[in-house]
Length: 171
Image: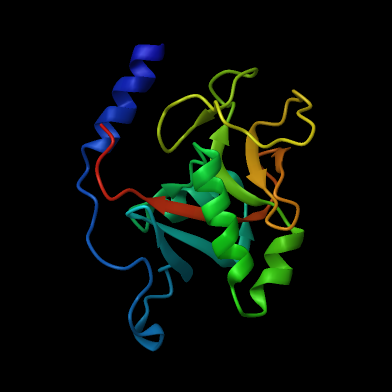
């Protein structure tokens, strides 16, 4: 089963990532199906945070995929702190909104009820910032920009989300 999952993941990675911005240049001409995402770049990868609507984890993954991205994989403390710094530096009215609610990541335990993996990389979650890990049946990981802590959630809950577009293919 593990080889099947890895094979499928690598097959998906062979898809050529589209070049260009995550959001349309002219919002008036934007296709209504295209997601409005605030974007920034960190360590050569592009990140976007979807604030237009709260969605469940599966919908968030599909919305990121529609932008040639995946939900964010917070694989290191340095990366996570850089993302938090950007979110907290946003000089607009969105910060109070996202500081109160979890933001979906690609972390989940859908394949193995006891271990978390990053959907975006296929790798296990080694670095984490859970305040209290409950080892519950919750299957998806969110993070709270206000507290900085990670939280476990049922994947069917609705939250904002963050996408990540890798500058290089990871397969």
